[in-house]
Amino acid sequence: MSDTRVVIAKQAARLLVNGDYVNLGIGIPTLITNHLPPGVEITLHTENGMLGYGPYPHEGEQDADLINAGKETITELPGCSYFGTEQSFAMVRGGHVDVTVLGAMEVSADGDLANWMIPGKKVKGMGGAMDMVAGAKKVIVAMEHATKDGKPKILPKCVLPLTGKGVVSAIVTELATFILDKGALTLTAMHPDTTVEAVRKVTGVDFKVAKDLASYER
Amino acid sequence: MNKSINSAAEAVERIKDGATIMMGGFGVCGIPENLVAALYAQGTKDLTLISNNAGLDDFGIGTLLKKGQVRKMILSYGGECKVFEDMTLDKRLEVEWTPQGTLAERIRAAGAGIGGFFTPTGYGTLVAEGKETRRIDGRWMVFEGPLHADFAFVKAWKGDVLGNLEYRKTARNINQVMATAAKFVIAEVEQLVDIGGLHPDHIHTPGIYVDTVLRGAKYVKPIEKLTVRKAAAHV
Image (cartoon, rainbow over the protein chains, first blue to last red):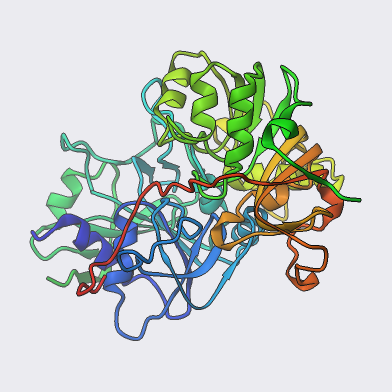
């Protein structure tokens, strides 16, 4: 299989709709802008206070006053705008941001999401993640299907402290894409190199298979 | 009234041990670096800091943590600051985790005279524990109270001696709302302009909120993650 992170980003990009206002989390989600399907134009929101940011600057053109929520240097696209944190999150909670794509440590069938804390170990904080998942119209989790030692990350119940309860609308992994609805998962797309049985082995909950199950592009 | 002051040291003189201080910035973008350095030099301790982040180990709030000046932090994200993470795990620092949007809105509420609000953010998570919840318009929400401070350190790009401020790009972040919510607001600016030097339509923080304005003597403005395109690449 080709680079797992790229496979995930490509599939997540297919869930975006032309005209969407999108907030991308740190890591895999940032790769999505390189893989947008033809005809899909999106506007990027960054929660520190900007809409319409562009790619990384050319060497020497970086500006310390212009960063994204991952603290990376970025650029302006024509038509971009700046605002304060209070307005940035008002637009998130107010349901004006169409989609957020973010990583996860655990997801439950009920759409619970855990991605901010490992008690006694990781104490970085939730940043804007709790607001994003509570407010964005659609919450897409883009993550590797299993942990490094092969344990499922999609579980009946999250064990780690939650970021949000009942918030996830879709999960995209290198193996499979699921839509979540009323506590049930439906497999809607799958990598051609895997099988439904193989996906079941690394998924901690039961799922339905869509009649029109799609295949990932190679 | 001319609100300008000559030095950062003079600006922080009135801050005593035990004070609660808001500090603007996102990561180290748009942080009041001259005021933080002056507070470090003054050695004021037992502080409660309200900030989005904890700075870096050797810059901004991280330096105050390392020197043992901080008792408590109210923040949303402390990654990138090892000192913060170590002190939190060892329980040498009291931490009140607040989601970033809730943090900004609690500050906004304080500055706008609002007694709190119900938000869907954090419902069913650790941050909702012990707080009133209510179902509003079909959604469960959590009550969050206003967040006040004794002082706010705010960083702007330009300011005038009346305290009017204009921010630049994403360095605005939480500075703008913090300028409304403290008993005493100290703004530091890169350029101090004459009265009339700011276009009235471009003023983000009207001078009514600001008590003192300082032209920062020096700006380092570090970049946490320098990400660039090579000239020929197509990112």
